[in-house]
Length: 215
Image: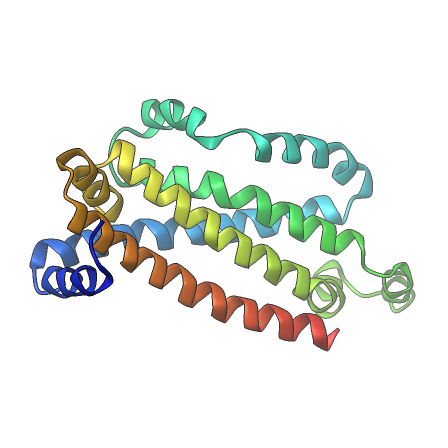
């Protein structure tokens, strides 16, 4: 194992190379695309299912069952469908993030007080007005929890996609370092990923707690 000082020093050396920043850019693009797809598709799916109780009761066991399946077993299908490259990384990352986002959103919508929805019917609000003024504000704390969980899982999925089916990115760099037994590279890339994930997660957790306290 490399010492913390040696790891930080080597990471600073890597930061001075163009290839390293090319890998960072490749991972960032794939992750942002996968996260966007995860949040949008998960949110829309959760809203649609949550607003229809029968549909949510039918879909929830299926979503939970799919969520419990090790996603790495689906990667051969992803590779056959999208090939090796950016689409496969984005798809594999999105697979990890869509389901938790949908489950949290669906649960949040289902737990909204019925009196609020009945009041919206009395006031004859449109569906878009109900979603905008009642559902989103009431469900926002749980939705944001889903965003926090989806962020972490999408990052994991994107990195796994790069490790097993890509020729660019930090995941590919890490897998290459493992094959070459380059301990300094492994430690440096791992440190960078941990710092990024921990920083964003702490920020999201702070916002999450504030939203829950506000409700």
